[in-house]
Length: 225
Image (cartoon, rainbow, N blue to C red; front, side, top):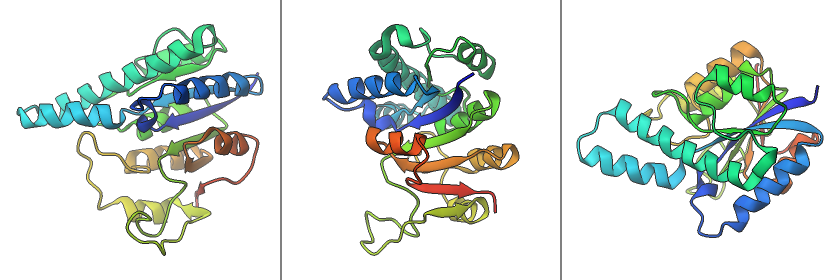
């Protein structure tokens, strides 16, 4: 059986006017499927945050907003499924059991969020645990974990490796409201820790992802100690 990799794909990729990017990702995952089985979790991105913001201003509660974000992430997943055509499982699984069943077909699996209260990062970690993935790649808008915000501090330093303990201490002050988007979250880290899951945070770029899948130390590795 081919090794399985789980890729959390930044929602920002699905909000682009230029659909060439999504087609490039589809071609990339088809290429990678010859050496491994990709299982992809689509983020909600700006589109999800747009809907969540409007619904929140109308008085919707946080669990309802979570459900709204999940719906958008599943629509994003469908866009990639359509681009992958017959190479992909035909619809986004809606729970962990269905993800596992979809993975057993050997096809590329693309899904969105699964449960209210969980970020797509946490969902991706749970899926990686469920399907016994070799590696979890969190492909984001930044190229790794920094000691401070690189958008605000030009002298920010990137970690090649960071322990779960240190990353948890950095994340503990972040909000967990619906539509929040961060490099990782506490739930995801707990899953990574208990399942000893090999995890990398890296830039959402096909060339970088390909290098990482082939073993190159791209982005930031999350270590258990």
